[in-house]
Structure formats: C-alpha cells, structure tokens
Image (cartoon, rainbow, N blue to C red; front, side, top):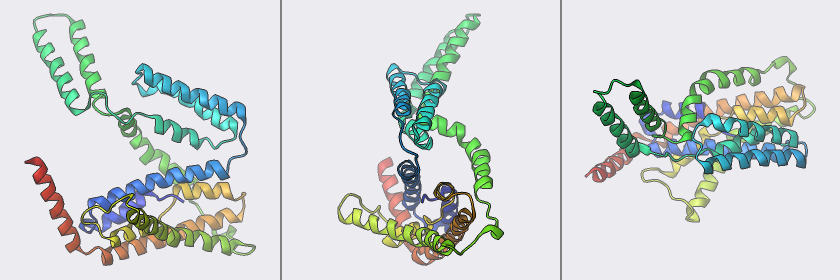
Length: 315
C-alpha cells in the first residue's frame, strides 16, 4: 500500500513537459490519501484490541487540542503536550500510535490568520509606527513594533504550513533516510521462496505493479462517470493510466506494513524483496508508458489552455 511520493514524483520529473501540472497534483493527492488508507489498515488489522482506558486518555488529548484551538493558541509548541497525551493514549489502548499522528495532523489548522493581505497591512503599520517613533529613544517601543512584525510574519501562513516548512529538512534528510536504512535492507540468503514465500512474492509484486494501476484508473473512471469528479482540461485518460502505473512505486508504508504483517523471519525478507521488485517494475513501466502515452503535443495544448486562463484572469 501507499505510493512513495519522492520516487513517483521523480519519475514524472523525468518525463519533463509531457506531464501537465494537473497530473502532478493528482499524484500528490493520491500519495497522501494512500498514506491515510494504509494507516487505517494498520489501525483495523494490525492493532491488538482496544483498551477503553487508553482510548479515554487519547480522547482527552484530542479534546485538549480542540479547546486550545477555540481559545486561540497559535504556537505549535503549545500543542505538543496534548499531542503526547493523544499518542500515549492510542499506544496504551492497543491502537497503533501512528493513528495519533494522523489525528493531530488532521486537527492542525490549515487556514492562515492574517494571510498575504493581512500580513502586508500589519507589517506596513508596524514599519510606519517605527518610522514615527524614530525620535523616541526607547528600545521598548522598537521591541513592541518588532513583536508586531514577528506576529505578522508568523500568521501570514497557516500553522500547518509552518510546521511542514519547519520539519521538511528533518524529514527529508534525517527521518526518511533513517527509515529507509532501517527497513529497506534485504538479506538475500534469508529469503526463502518455499513454504508460501513464492506466493507472498508474487502477491506483493502484482498488488503494487498491477493492482495499483488498475485501481487508480478504474475508480477514477467510475468517479468521472458518476459525475463525482471531472478530468482537468488537457488531461487525457492515458495520463491517468500513467499516474496509476507510477503509483505502484511503494516503499515507506509498504515496508512498514510488511514488518507488521509477518513475524521476524524469512517472510519479511520475501515481502521486502517483492516491494523492491514491484517498485522497480512500476518505475520503469511508468516511465516508458509516460513517454508513449503522453506525447508533447498534448501537453503543449494543455499549456496553452493554462496560459490563456491565466491571462484572462489577470486582465
């Protein structure tokens, strides 16, 4: 389960201008929803029962977050204690603690308090006040204006965006590499294809390299037919198929679920090997299909449509 964003987006980047922006957005949205689906699978199938006391503790943490939001707490650090309580509650309840991360993430505000225009107004007022106070030799006045500027800077974007920006470097250069090194290794001399190992290997490869493209394309087609969704302008069905093929690249959550699904032993190695093989197949086939199914002429037409829309919006 779950599409690995870094590798999948990398494959689309190799296709260059053949890929319309809407397809990249589709892949990113699919990868996020995939992760949520994988975490729900972990919660339902790989949690050891539910302890009511632990669940009550988790609910207390969630209520604490909601109350602080109502009271107007804006600093992310203020929510850390309540988030830890939520994590401890889910852990003691027997629910996989990754669910706590999902819940806290979903509760993080995604709307900016000031926004772009509010930032400009607030910052301009603070700068004008500093200019007006230039004859006052009092550092307390300047400190107050700088606090206003800092508030405007902080609230120009949503708390969710601030946290994402602050953690991006740690996640990209520390957490993800550590996870890959800890989980992606496959010792081939411990891989045994007997006693069901071959079935696991084939199942994992088919699930990622074949099942994901079929699922993405089929449910996208059904959503459009049911008028729940619509294809963006300039995006053909062949582009959706290409995204489905690339979506078969799965590492992080797929490896994580493998370690939960199988006891320590050769089966984990078989599952990891299947994930690596399937991801390689999905990457190569997705790249080849993208070059065949997404000719530059289609993208040029889509780009022209986007440029026309942008120019009309500007005027």
